Amino acid sequence: MTPPQARSPAVHIAIIGAGNVGGAVARGVVRAGHTVTVSATDTAHARALADEVGGTAAAGTAEAAREADATVLAVPYGAIPDVAREIADAVTGKLVIDATNPLTADGSQLAVTDRSGAEETAERLPGAHVVKAFNTVFASHQADPVIDGTQLDGFYAGDDEQAKNTVAALLEAIGYRPVDAGPLAAARALEHLAFLNISLNAANGWPWQSGWKLLGPTTPSG
Image (cartoon, rainbow, N blue to C red; front, side, top):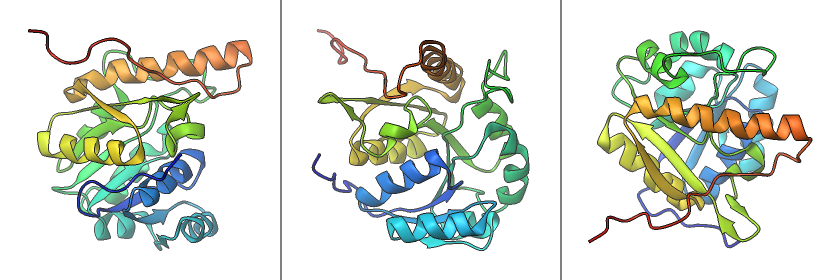
Protein backbone atom coordinates (compact mmCIF):
# COMPACT_ATOMS: atom_id res chain seq x y z
CA MET A 1 0.00 0.00 0.00
CA THR A 2 1.32 3.43 -0.90
CA PRO A 3 1.92 5.44 2.29
CA PRO A 4 -0.81 8.07 2.72
CA GLN A 5 0.04 11.72 2.90
CA ALA A 6 -1.13 14.13 5.59
CA ARG A 7 -4.08 16.12 4.25
CA SER A 8 -3.93 18.74 6.96
CA PRO A 9 -1.12 20.54 8.78
CA ALA A 10 1.13 18.24 10.77
CA VAL A 11 -0.23 17.48 14.23
CA HIS A 12 1.93 16.61 17.22
CA ILE A 13 0.30 13.60 18.84
CA ALA A 14 1.07 12.00 22.19
CA ILE A 15 0.60 8.24 22.21
CA ILE A 16 -0.05 7.00 25.74
CA GLY A 17 0.82 3.32 25.69
CA ALA A 18 3.49 1.43 23.75
CA GLY A 19 1.73 -1.91 23.31
CA ASN A 20 0.18 -3.32 20.15
CA VAL A 21 -2.42 -0.57 19.80
CA GLY A 22 -0.08 2.27 20.72
CA GLY A 23 2.53 0.95 18.33
CA ALA A 24 0.09 0.56 15.45
CA VAL A 25 -1.42 4.01 15.90
CA ALA A 26 2.04 5.56 16.19
CA ARG A 27 3.15 3.93 12.94
CA GLY A 28 0.00 5.08 11.15
CA VAL A 29 0.29 8.62 12.45
CA VAL A 30 3.92 8.96 11.38
CA ARG A 31 3.23 7.43 7.96
CA ALA A 32 0.50 10.03 7.53
CA GLY A 33 3.03 12.83 8.02
CA HIS A 34 2.43 13.72 11.67
CA THR A 35 4.80 13.61 14.65
CA VAL A 36 4.52 11.54 17.81
CA THR A 37 5.70 11.52 21.38
CA VAL A 38 5.36 8.18 23.16
CA SER A 39 4.77 7.58 26.86
CA ALA A 40 4.44 4.25 28.62
CA THR A 41 4.72 2.77 32.09
CA ASP A 42 7.92 1.10 30.94
CA THR A 43 10.09 3.94 29.63
CA ALA A 44 12.28 1.45 27.75
CA HIS A 45 9.24 0.36 25.74
CA ALA A 46 8.39 3.98 25.03
CA ARG A 47 11.92 4.68 23.80
CA ALA A 48 11.94 1.54 21.63
CA LEU A 49 8.67 2.49 19.93
CA ALA A 50 9.74 6.11 19.50
CA ASP A 51 13.00 4.99 17.92
CA GLU A 52 11.16 2.60 15.61
CA VAL A 53 8.74 5.19 14.24
CA GLY A 54 11.02 8.21 14.32
CA GLY A 55 9.30 9.93 17.22
CA THR A 56 10.38 10.95 20.69
CA ALA A 57 9.87 9.38 24.09
CA ALA A 58 8.59 11.41 27.03
CA ALA A 59 9.76 11.07 30.61
CA GLY A 60 6.15 10.93 31.80
CA THR A 61 2.56 10.76 30.66
CA ALA A 62 1.68 14.32 31.67
CA GLU A 63 4.75 15.64 29.90
CA ALA A 64 3.82 13.84 26.69
CA ALA A 65 0.27 15.22 26.74
CA ARG A 66 1.39 18.72 27.65
CA GLU A 67 3.73 18.99 24.67
CA ALA A 68 1.24 17.57 22.14
CA ASP A 69 -1.70 18.99 20.20
CA ALA A 70 -3.67 15.78 20.71
CA THR A 71 -3.39 12.69 22.88
CA VAL A 72 -4.27 9.10 22.03
CA LEU A 73 -5.21 6.80 24.91
CA ALA A 74 -3.87 3.38 23.91
CA VAL A 75 -3.71 1.74 27.33
CA PRO A 76 -5.78 -1.05 28.91
CA TYR A 77 -9.18 0.16 30.06
CA GLY A 78 -8.28 -0.48 33.69
CA ALA A 79 -5.45 2.05 33.46
CA ILE A 80 -7.70 4.90 32.34
CA PRO A 81 -8.49 6.33 35.82
CA ASP A 82 -4.80 6.71 36.70
CA VAL A 83 -3.85 8.05 33.27
CA ALA A 84 -6.73 10.54 33.37
CA ARG A 85 -5.57 11.88 36.72
CA GLU A 86 -2.07 12.36 35.34
CA ILE A 87 -3.03 14.18 32.14
CA ALA A 88 -6.19 16.09 33.15
CA ASP A 89 -4.50 19.47 33.42
CA ALA A 90 -2.27 18.88 30.39
CA VAL A 91 -5.17 18.17 27.98
CA THR A 92 -7.45 21.06 28.91
CA GLY A 93 -8.82 22.50 25.68
CA LYS A 94 -7.18 19.76 23.60
CA LEU A 95 -8.28 16.71 21.65
CA VAL A 96 -8.10 13.32 23.38
CA ILE A 97 -8.69 10.24 21.23
CA ASP A 98 -9.98 7.26 23.20
CA ALA A 99 -8.83 4.10 21.38
CA THR A 100 -9.63 1.77 24.27
CA ASN A 101 -12.28 -0.91 24.63
CA PRO A 102 -13.77 -1.28 28.13
CA LEU A 103 -13.26 -5.00 28.67
CA THR A 104 -13.38 -6.80 31.99
CA ALA A 105 -10.06 -8.09 33.33
CA ASP A 106 -10.58 -11.52 31.73
CA GLY A 107 -11.81 -10.02 28.45
CA SER A 108 -15.03 -12.00 28.56
CA GLN A 109 -17.42 -9.04 28.49
CA LEU A 110 -17.70 -5.28 28.52
CA ALA A 111 -17.15 -3.60 31.87
CA VAL A 112 -19.75 -0.88 31.17
CA THR A 113 -23.52 -1.10 30.89
CA ASP A 114 -25.69 1.96 30.30
CA ARG A 115 -22.93 4.19 28.94
CA SER A 116 -19.61 3.88 27.19
CA GLY A 117 -16.09 3.83 28.51
CA ALA A 118 -15.47 6.91 26.38
CA GLU A 119 -18.18 8.84 28.23
CA GLU A 120 -16.58 7.85 31.52
CA THR A 121 -13.24 9.08 30.20
CA ALA A 122 -14.81 12.39 29.18
CA GLU A 123 -16.11 12.82 32.73
CA ARG A 124 -12.60 12.25 34.04
CA LEU A 125 -11.21 14.78 31.55
CA PRO A 126 -13.82 17.56 31.69
CA GLY A 127 -11.57 20.12 30.02
CA ALA A 128 -10.71 17.95 27.02
CA HIS A 129 -12.53 17.22 23.76
CA VAL A 130 -12.83 13.42 23.84
CA VAL A 131 -13.42 11.55 20.59
CA LYS A 132 -13.80 7.78 20.29
CA ALA A 133 -11.78 6.34 17.40
CA PHE A 134 -9.50 3.45 16.37
CA ASN A 135 -11.26 1.01 18.74
CA THR A 136 -13.18 -0.95 16.08
CA VAL A 137 -10.05 -2.09 14.21
CA PHE A 138 -7.56 -4.63 15.52
CA ALA A 139 -3.96 -3.52 16.01
CA SER A 140 -2.98 -5.72 13.06
CA HIS A 141 -4.64 -3.24 10.69
CA GLN A 142 -4.68 0.07 12.56
CA ALA A 143 -1.65 1.40 10.69
CA ASP A 144 -2.67 -0.11 7.35
CA PRO A 145 -6.48 -0.34 7.31
CA VAL A 146 -6.95 -2.49 4.20
CA ILE A 147 -8.06 -6.14 4.17
CA ASP A 148 -8.00 -8.12 0.91
CA GLY A 149 -7.97 -4.86 -1.03
CA THR A 150 -10.93 -3.39 0.89
CA GLN A 151 -10.50 -0.10 2.75
CA LEU A 152 -11.78 -0.39 6.33
CA ASP A 153 -14.08 2.16 7.90
CA GLY A 154 -12.75 4.33 10.68
CA PHE A 155 -15.73 4.98 12.94
CA TYR A 156 -15.51 7.92 15.31
CA ALA A 157 -17.83 9.68 17.77
CA GLY A 158 -17.63 12.88 19.77
CA ASP A 159 -19.42 16.03 20.86
CA ASP A 160 -17.00 18.70 19.58
CA GLU A 161 -17.18 19.22 15.81
CA GLN A 162 -13.71 20.71 15.44
CA ALA A 163 -12.17 17.82 17.35
CA LYS A 164 -14.13 15.35 15.22
CA ASN A 165 -12.97 17.04 12.02
CA THR A 166 -9.37 16.67 13.18
CA VAL A 167 -9.91 12.97 13.87
CA ALA A 168 -11.64 12.44 10.51
CA ALA A 169 -8.70 14.03 8.70
CA LEU A 170 -6.27 11.87 10.67
CA LEU A 171 -8.20 8.68 9.91
CA GLU A 172 -8.38 9.54 6.21
CA ALA A 173 -4.67 10.34 6.05
CA ILE A 174 -3.83 6.97 7.60
CA GLY A 175 -5.98 5.21 5.00
CA TYR A 176 -9.43 4.70 6.52
CA ARG A 177 -12.78 5.81 5.17
CA PRO A 178 -13.90 8.02 8.07
CA VAL A 179 -17.47 7.41 9.25
CA ASP A 180 -19.02 9.86 11.72
CA ALA A 181 -21.05 7.76 14.16
CA GLY A 182 -22.49 10.80 15.93
CA PRO A 183 -22.13 12.26 19.43
CA LEU A 184 -19.93 10.70 22.10
CA ALA A 185 -22.90 8.66 23.33
CA ALA A 186 -22.57 6.69 20.06
CA ALA A 187 -19.33 5.29 21.45
CA ARG A 188 -21.58 2.80 23.24
CA ALA A 189 -22.37 1.23 19.86
CA LEU A 190 -18.75 1.40 18.71
CA GLU A 191 -17.54 -0.40 21.82
CA HIS A 192 -20.15 -3.12 21.33
CA LEU A 193 -19.15 -3.38 17.67
CA ALA A 194 -15.55 -3.88 18.71
CA PHE A 195 -16.53 -6.43 21.34
CA LEU A 196 -18.47 -8.46 18.77
CA ASN A 197 -15.37 -8.68 16.57
CA ILE A 198 -13.22 -9.61 19.57
CA SER A 199 -15.71 -12.27 20.68
CA LEU A 200 -15.98 -13.83 17.22
CA ASN A 201 -12.21 -14.13 16.88
CA ALA A 202 -11.78 -15.52 20.38
CA ALA A 203 -14.61 -18.04 20.09
CA ASN A 204 -13.76 -19.30 16.62
CA GLY A 205 -9.98 -19.23 16.67
CA TRP A 206 -9.84 -16.63 13.91
CA PRO A 207 -6.48 -14.90 13.23
CA TRP A 208 -7.50 -11.42 14.50
CA GLN A 209 -7.49 -9.94 11.00
CA SER A 210 -11.21 -9.16 10.52
CA GLY A 211 -12.58 -5.63 10.30
CA TRP A 212 -15.78 -3.69 9.70
CA LYS A 213 -16.93 -2.16 6.42
CA LEU A 214 -20.30 -0.47 5.94
CA LEU A 215 -21.57 -1.32 2.45
CA GLY A 216 -24.09 0.46 0.30
CA PRO A 217 -24.80 4.16 -0.37
CA THR A 218 -23.55 6.44 2.39
CA THR A 219 -24.63 9.79 0.94
CA PRO A 220 -28.09 11.40 1.27
CA SER A 221 -30.58 10.33 -1.38
CA GLY A 222 -32.41 12.77 -3.60
